[in-house]
Image (cartoon, rainbow, N blue to C red; front, side, top):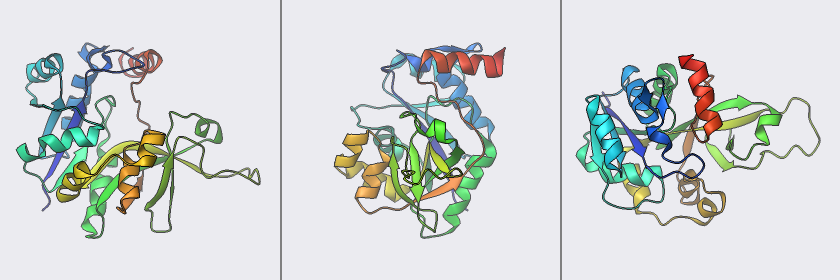
Length: 240
């Protein structure tokens, strides 16, 4: 049996919505909601929040959660959770985004299931979106090969619809990453790559260094809290 841990990177600073993880979401903060929804899926042997800030630490400990306080600056969420990895005993490490407070059990179980294939090193989620949504640079798109492994991720709408096909499928990347333990350790030792720096997408570091990322389809629509508008949408969806 594989042992599985969820590590939730929780950086306090944010650009578009300052201190977004401690904003109120139905009587609890965003990060508390993310932690609790992750625990409540029942998927994980352990769930930890990995943070750089005492307020987030206090909030998670106040609901009985486990916290690792990172000591270094990090280039990405995956780099941050890699620092905490030595404190966690697990075969698979799942990077659950701290600003996605509504986790889904089926999606997570489907993601983990692909690791019964010993060739799978890293896995992540994708969902179908409309051509209109594909134009949004905040919706990261992914294209895959015939085995379902990612060929590329981009903020640009890929593939480019040169012939204006009416039924072209676009896939949005859902930023939950599942790593074999040794691969996450290797990831954190890699230098930030050129494409990663251009697109500001951490997963491109893996592709540029020859790692495969198995993409798993989900129909669960997540809400990532990036802006005040996102926060209001999440409040109305679940708590009004």
